[in-house]
Length: 272
Image (cartoon, rainbow, N blue to C red; front, side, top):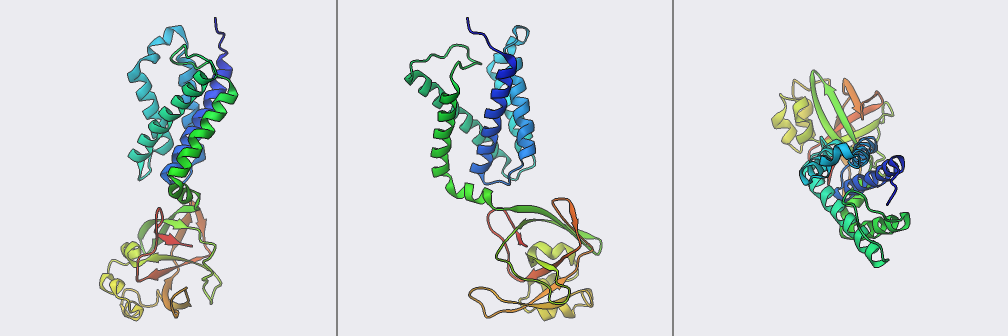
């Protein structure tokens, strides 16, 4: 008869579940939110521990397992734009990991008994996870690279209007305000348009002087010089927002530059 220690089972599942949701996030190329992943892992570990109690034997039913997995995915990835992709990837990674554990255990002469508890050694678990992660990392290396990029949530408030952006922390961005020395956050005019509801036509123009001549923007915008690879340089209109928050933290050392062309890439729409 196997003796299962609930505390050890909880700790083991906590570690493995955290790695699973973290691996899924990296594969999907979303910004890593480790606190949410830990909460998801705590729920998963709690479910695993409770499922072995005789009075809660119904936890072994397939619908309950699926619901528990869905709750874990929602805790970890709720609010993400790629929510459905993250959920499906989480289930796929979990199935692949379980299959790898089963295959390696059988190869070593082990057996799978209880459907909720796999009596395998820690080396088997480590090897299984490493194998799955290596294979998936190769197949989804572009998404993993995207997840490693530092992207923050930015809220900009100006004249009673607000926009929310995904901002890439670009170490190659050396642009600064020559008057105040403030750092410059660059966003496309399409993303900043809600801040200037009376300047839609001027925002679409590549001639920034039209924007400065608009009565609504008069005295609120000025120009700063810039240069970039592949261009001869030029001028960008900038303004000082009433408020800028990066990941919820208030910043008073940032001005915002309006780019006539879209700025961004996979997972971000502005640069700082």
